[in-house]
Amino acid sequence: MSNRQHCIIVGGSHAGAQAAVSLRQEGWNGAITLISAEPILPYHRPPLSKAFLCGGKSDDELLIRPADFYAKQGIEVRLNTRVARVDAASRTLTCDDGTQLAYSHLILATGADVRRLSVPGSELPGVCYLRGRDDVLAIRRHLKPGGRAVIVGGGYIGLETAASLRKQGMQVVVLEAQSRVLQRVTAAEVSDFYTRVHREEGVEVMLEAAIDHIAGGEAVEAVVLSDGRTLPADLVVVGIGVLPNVELARQMGLEADNGIRVDEHARTALDDVYAVGDCTFHYNPIYATWLRLESVQNATDQARTAALAICGKAAPYKTLPWFWSDQYDLKLQIAGLSTGYDQVVIRGDSRHGRSFSAFYLREGRLLAVDAVNRPKEFTFTKRFLAEGRSADAQRLADESVDFQACFS
Ligand code: FAD
Image 1 (tube, rainbow, N blue to C red):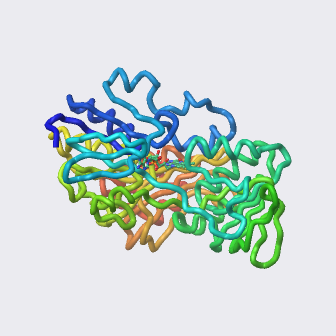
Image 2 (cartoon, helix red, strand yellow; image 1 turned 30 degrees about the vertical axis):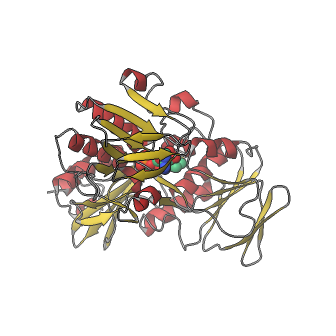
Image 3 (cartoon, rainbow, N blue to C red; image 1 turned 45 degrees about the vertical axis):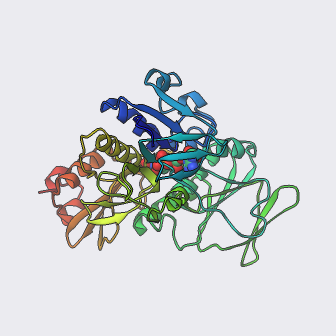
């Protein structure tokens, strides 16, 4: 084991990039190496299914920090490099090109990868996924006005992709296996709202749809459902969730089932080994629950937490989760965790309009909000949730009552 202070970060996306930045900001004087399996510098993923898919952003505009930032900060970035093994006892790691590097501190920011479709025909050209920038380039090769796209999965990625493809004149079908879109993450009222809006925008939304196989010769030609219906397709985009990248952690002997288990300082069970972002399973003290989050907020906040701990300024991670999704003219902003709600209060008209908020409560306690085109309600609720204020459900449902007066 060398005495050199060297923090190696595995994974160069939101969490990895923020960890490197925060280490420098918090006074880390040692070496920093950021190792990324991807071919380009850390970039923002949210625009991938939105502006970037629509062709409205260049590679440079995607970057989290400009290209010269890392050298100026003394951060060595190794692109196109995958860490294959870590030997925690000797504190060395081996990359897929055979390079060995010694570390004093290690941050795993390995994120998540797409869950793959396994029906026959899934490997045909034209069946695409959406996790990285190269995936978007692959999708774009199949885009043409009037072309037919089938989206598998009515979650945020699937619905955002549907909106972006519609904007570009594609005919779009969304297949959702459950009885409503966004079932895992929102209330029925919000699901119904998004189904209505997508249908109004010309998307065919098919619920309780099961795929039998994907048909094609040289490339995808159709998606065939279990009930025999055939949907012609020039492009299939699969958005059926992600799985955390935990292989390295497991190989190091760390507990990692639905994510790498970390404490409130993003520390794993091994000395000086941290994990941050989508790959972690962590405790949220606000909701008194263990969870794995897939959000930029969590990736960046947890990365800061790890950097603070490494720099001897440990401050426990205690942040309210928040998230957003853009589809058409709709900006959905979510604060808090709705899991376990027993009441939903709608403020505004979700059945006919395009602006409302859905408040989630359990035993009268406010848990979360989904605010559609209501930035003020989102901002206030985020603050009130963090402050632990309680909400009056009846008043919330009544738009004639001043919003802030609904909370005590
Ligand atoms: P990741 O972004 O998954 O990055 C992990 C990186 O580690 C990858 O580059 C991977 O290649 C690399 N890696 C893995 N293993 C190794 C290894 N062994 N060696 C080297 N490198 C390795 N979140 C929001 O909050 N709002 C949104 O609107 C939103 N929209 C999204 C839209 C899309 C299309 C996608 C895909 C995601 C979106 N998200 C959104 C989620 C958000 O992007 C993720 O939560 C975030 O990227 C997590 O960052 P991360 O650094 O933890 O992991």
